[in-house]
Image 1 (tube, rainbow, N blue to C red):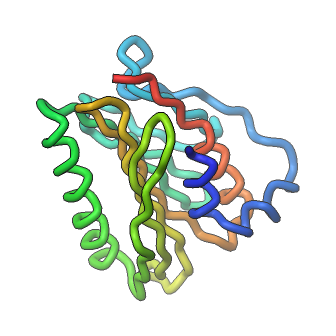
Image 2: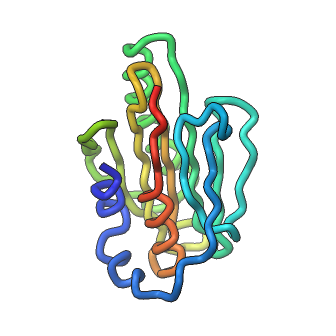
Length: 177
């Protein structure tokens, strides 16, 4: 499932970047914590990570080069509430990007198939300094009432960050409902 997500987000630039040197040391992060993990990711140890106070909070990873990836999971009382949240996330993501970036171009949302289905939204724009940025927002169904959200902004010219973002996204491992 995440190979399709990764391909849609990073495209051909990742293929070129995979020939870069050895992968940095990684740390496995569990959301919200190891004992109650809803999912895990592996990230370079030199990326800054924020703590999570409770389920529903975003965990942020920031590379030394400025790439940002955010992850969270939310549990709802019903499957209908979870579906409504997926729809709301796409609306709010587009609004957030247009408020915080310039020249935002979003592609049509696509379904993610597999054991943990969902939807993804990709696009591009420019940051406040006029630098090109690629975006990804994805919602993944972890269980009937639980969804995970992944959000990323990466500078496409930074081949190392693209490769590392690829590795992080590819390492996403659902723990179930």
